[in-house]
Amino acid sequence: MDNFFSFPSSDKNIWLQKVTEDVKGKKNIEEFFQNIDGITIDPFYTETERSDDFEPLDRLFDVVERGLRLNIDHETKNHEYIKRFLECGASALQLDIKSGIAPEDLLSGIFAEYIFMHLICKDKDQAILYSDYMENQYKDKSTLTFIQVENKIIYPLQTIICDIDVSKEVIGPLSIFLKEAEEKIQEAKPYRCIPNVSIGKNFLLSISTLRAIRILWENLVAKQGFEGDIPAILTVRPEESELSSDPNQCLIEMSYLTLSALIGNVDVFYGTHSNQETNHLLNVLMMQHVFIEEGKLDTIKDPLAGSYMVEQITHKIVEQVWQKYLEGENSK
View (cartoon, rainbow, N blue to C red):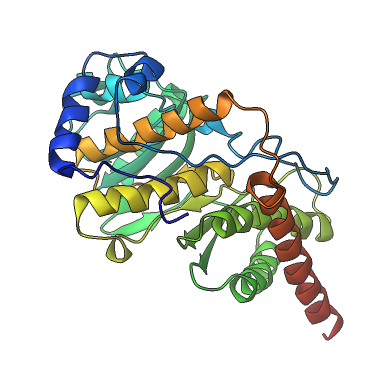
């Protein structure tokens, strides 16, 4: 998996510049990639027995509709770039809006399936005005709105937040997550949970862990006897300090993390280096290329690859963490 994305051996900067120039004005991504050398993809698909305790993967890459998000800061004026990004396969916009910038000015003429808002305001009154505007104007699309006032993030009421770091270990942090989530559920009656997850660079393990978190949360909610669904908005925010400072290497690392998040059914994925428009575009192009190649295949006859491995690892994670949780319950 070390060569999941292989760049050409020639000068990378020249190649990056060529991609950026060639993609301008081209809407057909498959046609675009037929004319480009230097990207090799190792696909992973397999047939596997199905189980009933969580949704199986017919293919490893089956979450195309979640798309990718473009992180737009308040100074972004290049609407043509935004539109081009969306044409390349992104279905959502991440908007970082500072006070004084009207959302309608930024979104004029822009369509996205989902809109995520990060409102940066000077005071709570201003934050409430922005929040009300987004709820009324984009109530069908704005699936996650949170507010930052004087460097403090304010989430909507009845939202519980859980930080989970599974970048180096899985079972221990997930066991702690269940315990903390149980305490928070008992203290309040939330209408949603936001697990903030830090994942590592082990591709299949990261996918399996993300899927396991959602299953464990659903099991916990059911065990607590709540009526109806309390959704978990699974969020992955890569730590910029752990990524390479080299733009090309960072792009490769972000590709691993982006794919892990997409295939792991993550709801919100935060990119880094948002000021590097070339890297944003290259990342989404590579994701789109993976999905195009995947759509051409039915199966690979290797039972040790892809979705089979994801399902087996997910099973083991859920089983071990849930058993540890039940043992803790019985020892009380």
